[in-house]
Length: 174
Image 1 (cartoon, rainbow, N blue to C red):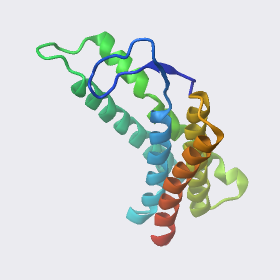
Image 2: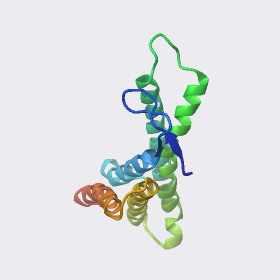
Image 3: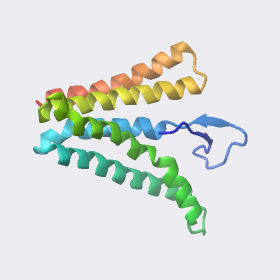
């Protein structure tokens, strides 16, 4: 995932001229999504490593497409069709949702090299997803010029969200 700084487009749809914002929301969201997939996958069935990797990637792609559509629909100009340029811009902007699934998927794929069974693979990948979620949130805060206290708060909030997913997996008995 590359460092990106985007022009701000608030919910009002008006572009804020000259204001830059860090843009790690998709990476944070995608990491939380990957953690959720890993936490719940075992509750609905038994997956092979390959199936779990595919579930992570396909879920990332589906949510990416949903976010692209939602963003385009939300910014739609009255009476104007979407341009190919606008679709590409939004698709690129939201791509980090898919990218965030890559590292947990790699963790699942290489887990046999670490001697992990399927359950251990899922826990490893879940840990990777939570760690990257906290890291992206902290990186975003740091690049935005957050104070040390704000950075710690960002990390703590994202760690709490990740730990809620971990607790859900533990409660579900996996």
